[in-house]
Length: 586
Image (cartoon, rainbow, N blue to C red; front, top):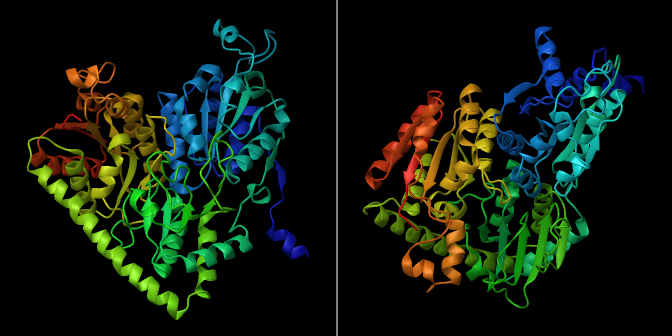
């Protein structure tokens, strides 16, 4: 027994420090935090001083990633988490810094990003003898009735540090809750007086002894039922958006689909299934869903649009998901006959193993016939998509299809590209032209807060410096992403990213529903769209040059491929690149 106990770390240890801020930093280090994504204020400086103290003394401290705007910090932390699966830490100031996280908090919630967000809290006291007490005009203005209320709708857990000696306990709890399934953001506030209080020997908590809760493979009996349904299905279908959030999930889905010749239609939040595989059936489920008797939905928040997609009335739906009934989406009424709450990677592995004993010779004949038909359909889709792009390549303007084709060709030439995708209305067209064949090489926020793509590109690059990260963003997303702050961070952190702007000079996400709803309306008839057209567009390439990045604008189809290669060359040489692609007006 003694030898066994010696191999297990003690759950709680103590450490000699000075102030609570130093204990906070040590608690982050104990949790394995590599980067602290920071936008500072008058309340965060004790933490900044503590980090500098640790650096000067040769002790381990997180790498500080200074972000000139808060949305860059949270988007970068989200990107880092997506690329590694390890919870990340963000530090901002009081209520206004928290508010500046904006829609990136929505993305972290909907994208299930385990991020610990810490914020300062306006000082409580006016006692001149109390270190950290109120010393400036804004300390009265920045105190809110409920600072936590700003984020409570989006977080799993929130807490204000109340005692200096609990800092290690609070940080440990934050990381444990953030990483537990389903993962998500948490929030804690740090009063300035407490950060500057002498704490002595605070407790540190070993994360190995406070593991996050994992769902594992789920209910074996339910998976056995799913195996029976899939084995008997004549026209099965797989719909997924996030099965490839890990390489293990990508491999498990591939193995299962190959065993049964299951057609896959994906929404590419991640690289879920090789795009050049004969079983890959594109990105529109409308046709196949109408004829499918069993549909397996894997990690998908919106598997289809009910107003445009009709299911076979007798279809049976299986949903394997970390949250199969979407508890935090108020109205979610997609039919699910067999919900299985699980980590999809081990669940798919177990499902595949259960199917191995259910496949008879009769099944095999049907499976192989289905495989051949799906391969034909796959080739037909690919040929049609390619023909559209090549035809556009001979035109006068750059189209989304041609840009997608050129990006796909670039990826075929370079096997180290990792993509951050915030293309919005251009995404499905690019996916058709740009098949992804490598797991863990494509990242989408999972939410709808625009401005994520720049900061997330920074985070992914910091997490995977050996990869060439390409952020594909709309022109609106580029502006929302605080480009000066994001590009500056890429340059100062030696984390170059190639940014490709899909510049259609409008808010196309607003224009599309307007045109669909008012096809003969005043906007369409006059070709003037109030609050939508972005003309004349800013010179985004000049913004790049202002922070020392490479910038180029391209508008001719024949010049596009060379411009993309110049951008990638710049990134390989250590300089962020912005390629502003002037698209044909929608």
